Amino acid sequence: MMELKRIYWSRHALRLAYSALIVWLAVSVVLALMPKGNVGAGNSKSTVTEVFRSLVDGVLAAVAIPGLLIVALFIVAVVVHGRDVRRRDPIRRFSRQQRREGMARAGGQCEMEAGLRRRCSRPAEHGDHFYPWSKGGSTNLQNFVAACARCNRTKGARIPSPGQQARIKRRRREYVVPESSVSVGERRQLA
Image 1 (cartoon, one colour):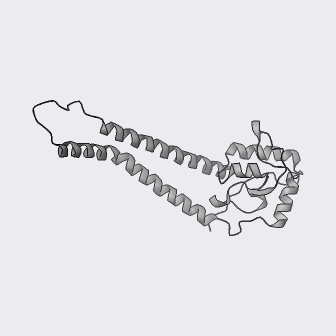
Image 2 (image 1 turned 120 degrees about the horizontal axis):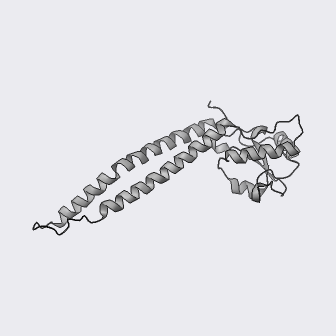
């Protein structure tokens, strides 16, 4: 569970940093395009070319640092995505046996969250990878979550939060036989 927490929060931090850099970049461009206080002052007349050149120079100077940081974050995202692709399980679909066992473990009911963090009351129709297959989630019973069509579509390929993971584990203790594992989510190791 600790590894999934780290992955969730590191991806959240990357998204937040990217958003902050985009805002910084936009503000820098707007401030660079704003007229300076010395426009029209003095006797020297500026040509259109000089004004345009000074605007371009100002914008380039303003976007240099946030632009480089955005490029660096993009490179990090490409590396992370490449590792996710290499982690993908060669088998994407759960076997019939895994599906049967997972659905029996859930009692045929969706294991995902409905409103107010309660268990969804709809019947399970799908076997979902709790930790998404596209992000390196394993195709095994520990990563299997019974889900209704609505919950499966809503979750999509997002990495569930550590809180969601803990709540599913807690709920599973209520309906899983004591000998069985209640843990949820597993990421495949790099090959």
